[in-house]
Image (cartoon, rainbow, N blue to C red; front, top):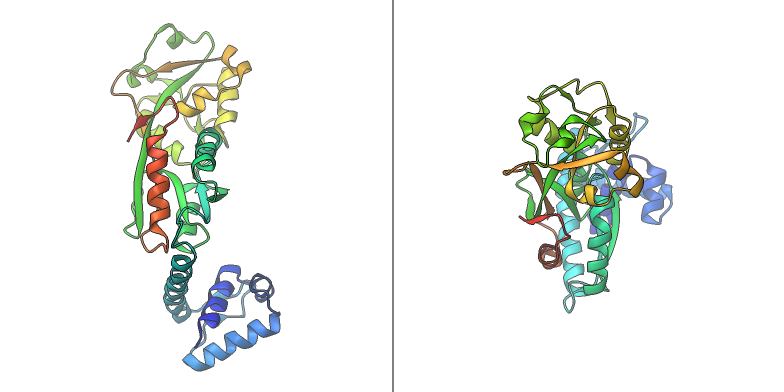
Length: 301
């Protein structure tokens, strides 16, 4: 049993198809099939169910696959330690970002990182929280920018900043007559939400769920769509501070923003990565840099 065979095992599990896995490994499909069969013969078990449309690990295959991932990850750690011994900030990071944060925070973060760490390359993947967490586990992502809390003992979690929520109201709405609002002021208002799967949807319900009505009637796939719906007078919504500051000029005529009175509701954004990551110093430095250079409109976590 070799390290290369274990890499083939992981690749086939990730792609679920011999052809795509072989292409990712830069070998022929027949070579991959032969190597997997050789590994199965050596172990004396069947690792994959080949009768399905998508090749899937057998129950024993899933157990062996997890051990194989750990071995491959440790081997990668050795390689990375050797490669980046002199400069841990000269490498490539696959970074997942939630959609309600990416468009508003990344321009600031990327400019900062590029200036301070020109050798650090961030490859971005915008996904919802469950997908980011899954891809941290399977190694497709190295780190994620998420709304906290995140409950996973296998992840290192570093809070970066607290982002307050604001009420977004149609122009001329009765609540816009107030300089600040209480959450209870939303009693009876139609609260518009993002679709299922967005963590901001759950956070909005935590804040306003007992104070708003009709919340299932109108849902959107993005904050910008919600902003336009508010401008059309379809209801109200909650906007994170960074999204408020990034509002298009045209929307400022149709949408009025009001802060909440202290203690204002909000969310905490953090950087998360695997505790077993082969280059922890990279993420520790990245988190420290992001924490010490916050954009306007947010507070230290």
